[in-house]
Image 1 (tube, rainbow, N blue to C red):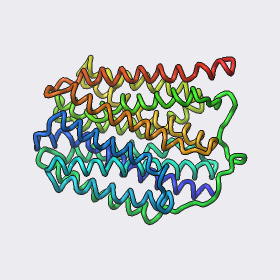
Image 2: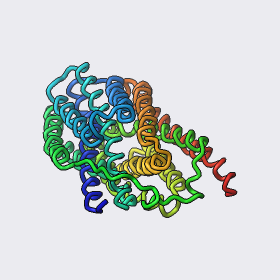
Image 3: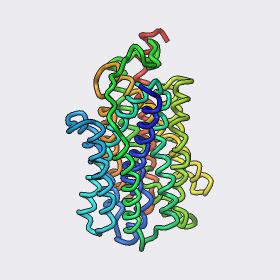
Image 4: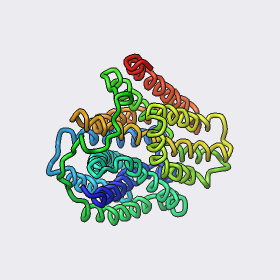
Length: 393
């Protein structure tokens, strides 16, 4: 397959994730404090809305495994359009039940598009001998978070939160039309012998033990990161001196996320993906726990950057490994890993909302999240024991 086709699929995949992840999913984070002010939405209800969205994402992640209506590309376009509509309609209602339905639909379609885009793009990059560029795919999410957070900071307040959703929906529709008209199916088969999978016996000794604990680590990452991913802007909003700049904390997340996928992909190839995962987890732990100890502006910027610089990086490391294992085993492990990740995301925001309660104290929720990240590091360590013994490391 020509390199130009691979590049085209990559760019369209980035645009798809920009829409369904950065806008359809994560724009909820910077808009949330303004919705709470205007509609008196409680922290528990805010957590429930997030949980409903992630429950939808969990279901959506599994749909491509069991149901492809026409083809991966055509299905991606259908789910993409539904996702855009769900974002647009958020600005036309104040009804909590309707919000739940819309966030649920947004979650389902985010999950399906994420899995389909990952499969379509990573397969295309493999076919074109460009698998080393996989990190660029998920950087689309970082670009989207960065640009949408700047828009929210400049435009949104408690009076304009509804029109923010409408504007984001219209912008998504414009970008989505590019994907709908330009993305095409590529029929060429994968040739494992000819394509560069970077497989070597030492690093690719996959056992059932490895897969179980590798998956547990990704589940814990999904649960651990999402607390900050849901409440970061609300946390900054609760600090009197920084209230006006709350949305900018999400901008720093996006700014750090943009190059993170590429950097972690390169680092994974240089030092080994397990070592890269260890490092990313440790840095994310620091980013999540830091606001418990300090509300200083600099420490919150560091926290935002560490968080933004690792959560998509970990997705890149886990997803690229999942696609590699899928190519080797013939099973859709990308969808399975996304489902497992989503499971963590469904559980954590609800419990975080309970821990926060009616207070503006987020420390309990952050300690809960950081504890999960420590367990994820332990799971990765355990996953390696039989592999190291087998290989004599």
